[in-house]
Image 1 (cartoon, rainbow, N blue to C red):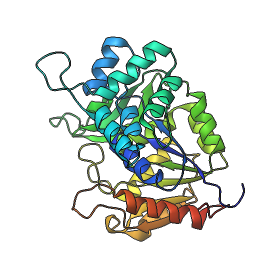
Image 2: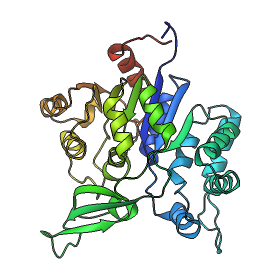
Image 3: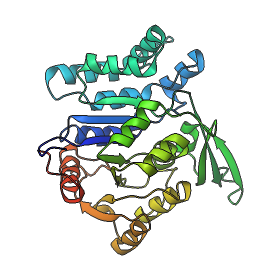
Length: 324
């Protein structure tokens, strides 16, 4: 690639974690693809999924909103597609963007073409793809899901339930167990310079990508460098009490063949740097610590700080930088 070209980046995840990563990455590259989980079964997405049999559009909508520009056009459309109706009827809590995406799916009969068209309408700085073209159910083995039976392991069904379980998640799997990956998503991973996994809900947004066989094969085989972006804090319920290194350990149990190049963490969120370094070495990865959190005390990433961290990683660890 010629000097000065932008890196091809693929970001995988779902929900607000992926949105944070995309808001940062669009600041440093114009060649950006989001690959999004499609196992959501709650809220507006769950209702549309149950009623129409479609992919849950919510995380796809959030990714598109995150890719909107900072100009008036981009920010206006970001607010519009995120807008939720408030009523006493059937439209209550439906998001405008969810309805728009589903309408285009029905009109065009093609998930990828419809999402590309929404992105064009919004002026999105990148592309959004579902990880699979079939709706998926997330199931988890959870110890202590019933507080009255703290030592028993139960199967918990549904992403919304898994995300809020009071028990300890042991592992997750998808139904169907071998869902087809969207070919464009596989191609994007294989053609990337960098693949970014996380941050986000660990068991319900990050790990599911590793449970789609063709997508996992692409992540293992790609010549791209791979960075894992850790969360700023454990998630109540799903990863309650998890240390940064434990996030890596459970990731490795679900995808033992996956290698990483860099693990990015906020320096204030890592109490034991040596343990995290040791956990990262098992993936073949170096640890990069950087201030990436907002300064308001909430466990949310600051887009500018996260962009600076990604940019530095791409330059320091990349094969062909700098790109700007």
